[in-house]
Length: 423
Image (cartoon, rainbow, N blue to C red):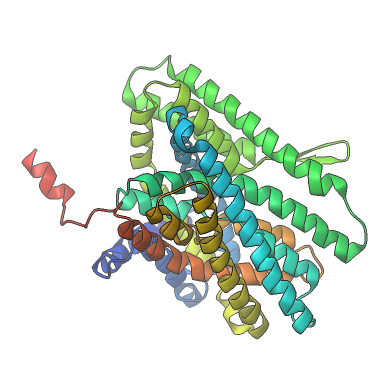
């Protein structure tokens, strides 16, 4: 226990201290946290085998899953704040159209690139693996995007649309992956599982939305019994923890495997709560401040989780480069095309695709499922490689695009310490 606490403290201190360096380099703090995780991980300081100084094994990093899952739950809950009815009436239909089209376009482009590689070099990648990776390409990581938006207080049409599209992307990616993985499994085994391809993914989405809506409604009802800000924030935190815990449950109904999506459950809870609670805006702001250390730990642990062994595998690098290039093109051109047909401004059309490049938790979860294929290890390693690249480069590209769109103000020299003295 003492080693775990020291390790968490070192993770927080290391991430925050490194963020001072990245600030001088005009890079987002998220990049600093991820690099700190790499340095503290099993392939750098962890190899020294000094308890508390670094994560000595990937298994030790995995033992911190409760922290990363909890942080992801809070991130998804606050994204629900973007789905207010007043905003959805103006941009909801367009955001859904863009979210679906760019995800499908990305999947198709990655499929084409990797299937072409399969026919050119059958020994490098199988057809089932190519189709599965195409589906995983649709997923976008909401955490890094949201952290960049928060750090620089980005606001404007592009930022608001981005947060909606990133949230929608999870539901679209889940369906696309389930269908593609079902096809890939059929190619490998010779039979089609209709339950796995159609019923189970749709049921997961429905169950997740239902559970999230119930938690959001119940949170609003319980909030009415408390009047102090601290107690209302505490009960809000408790309900997010409840949503995270319940979303991890799995059960069987006959032949149908039932489960929940953590992101969809927490996002729906936040959406319902924000639309029916008149003081939700203030509570969301207070929760954001409370969860900052949790978010830092999320990215440091995510950085430590990145397996650098994949960099020594030529096949993984070859497939990974094709995957990254085709996915990046798919996100960029898919977003540009969908923005044009929904009559978005030139600024949004030019920059939205770049902001959708980050990829992490959702894709890694899909990769674990894909690992059950005959050559699923390749799919997992390719995703690990792409996450390493996207998580280190993606936040900086997101910041650059939001600045180019005029939605991030130039950074000024502000100090909370000085500000407190003058109050």
